[in-house]
Image (cartoon, rainbow, N blue to C red; front, side):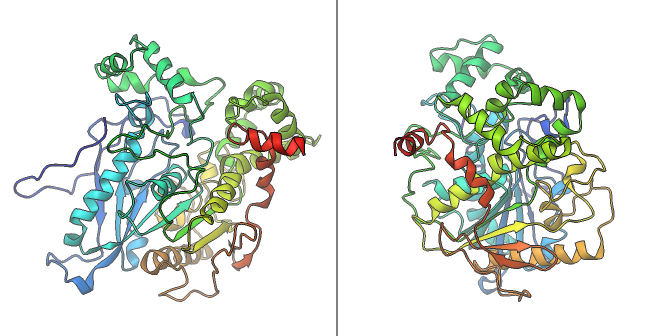
Length: 496
């Protein structure tokens, strides 16, 4: 069911306890144990003001609401992962939120019995709660910036497209994720097919949907999450069986229009970007394991359509052939492994960002700021994505360690890493304050907004940041393929 607003409580609420995890199992670190609880819709509010006095209106601070990543399968808002130590060096209020995951958050029957997108509706309810209460914490409810990484970045973009989220926030930052990423956008027929499969696994009727949902609600939540391994075709693929859907137009619907259609609501100021080697998120577990690497290469005809989410295309074999020719023609093993990183970088993150940015220019007059993080720090999330101590560039999620003190990354940051963190915190909080990463705190260069979907100007964040053009240009290859959402366009090109 969709979330409901919390009722008022009497007396003083003890809010000093850690927030519980939503039920999950983390496929990115090969977690076997299921953890968390259903009573998990909590948020953390951090303020730089330690007084108990209610703030005056002219002292209210901009609010930054962080939406965690994890492929809508895992993740949480805990201070151990997303603490306030860096961001609260600036004059902002930080809020981190939980939302339901996996089938508990994203199952859909595409009708009134379970329309879907409950995890996104959880986020939306948190934004409503913030509108009601944040003034008491010193936050300006007229200056709320949502920001997130990976599935959190995709979530932020989905809120930009949701008519029922309009007005709950005023700026958005999508780090390494948009609403068009293939692991977050359900292809036609996919949601119902996976709902039927889940019901069958748990001995529930597959129809009518009212009886299916009634039965599923009697099942233990751990039992429901425990089915996730049964959806995998090879290894941990497909990574996200349950995704966002286009809902029937019912009261409270989060999304009723295809994200590729021009939005009815004008986009807020938006910052979005990528890390240089996003694909190491997936490639590490394949390329560092001899058996999995050999399976991937020999079984690519069946594995690629699943892991890259194009099994719904009528041109599966053609796409596989073109992808192999683009990324895997080298004879050298190391070059092939590098090609696998690029495949995931471009398919999972690069082209979906390019496509989303181009579409946004069709319905916004607000600025769009783009970035590409190429700075290499001492630490990297590649350490937990299968690579260990092996150096693998600037991995997916590496931007997080500049915004939050990620405690499980083992090495001490260098002096340059600390300076980069200060710079990124400044740009992000500048944007949350003014809608412009260049002010009010001055940065040592000019970050210009992109002027169009064709020029795609972006800031390359390196040891010496500089402006460049043609954002994520290599990934445009994926726009030439007959994927499920552009088959008609592809046929028109062929006929020409």
